[in-house]
Length: 316
Image 1 (tube, rainbow, N blue to C red):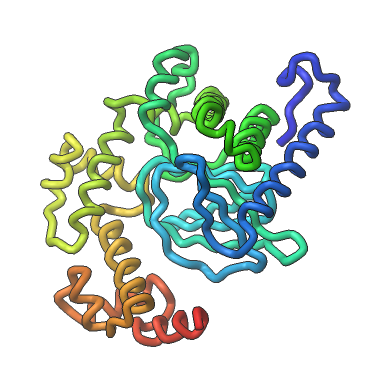
Image 2 (cartoon, helix red, strand yellow):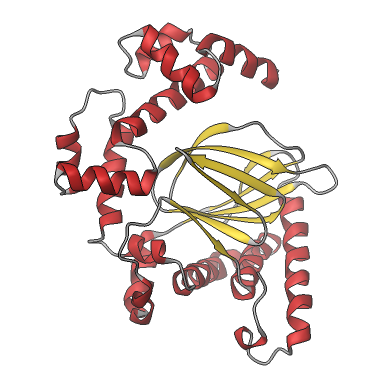
């Protein structure tokens, strides 16, 4: 999404496109060099991870934490419950809570690999920025935002992300400048029209933060038998209010959410630690092997043992 010249003071309209393309080319170059192989690459910049893939990927489960995912090349699809999000260099993704998703890269090649910069969202900085910029509060929506939202990029945000990535080439400047540039990135996100989810994240007493508290507890106790009333109490809500808001954020009920956490961990145990299906199911909290097999096949399309063998073969 390209902005009008009014969004870049002093820049003639015909130069906006050129500036945007130059910044994007720089980003592609920097990320390509600092993420030379497929996979996730940590960086010296706190909270910044680079992702690369030279090929499309099959849908794989992952738990998103509160992050900004900024694609500079390629395209990705993310599914959460029945909702599906497709985004590319024109849009960015914000995950507002810890949430299990199925993600797949759907556009990538050796000539033009999928390249993405992932930035952890600092709640303390977001909250401070929200307090210092009360004018942004008019954007807050009455309805509960989703745990994952897409929004169109802007030249200002692209420029800030580009300067952040470029600090990888000047590590002597990173310690002093990276916190300032990250702060600018968060400011651009927070003040962008339509980013109600960021404002909800920044408010300590928001319903989203209450749901996030319950999600954090669920992630730590997903193997256990839990009562909805107990989780609702952690969020400080009635059972009915909690259930409605939880589903609005995650597209799942609390028990469906717990099931996804269990299945994702069971899949990891079978692939990475070679546990058999019964052992993996028991480890994550299932008492019935048949129920585990049914839930697993419904989520991933294959019975547990067959799926694990297929994934181990792909890795080999």
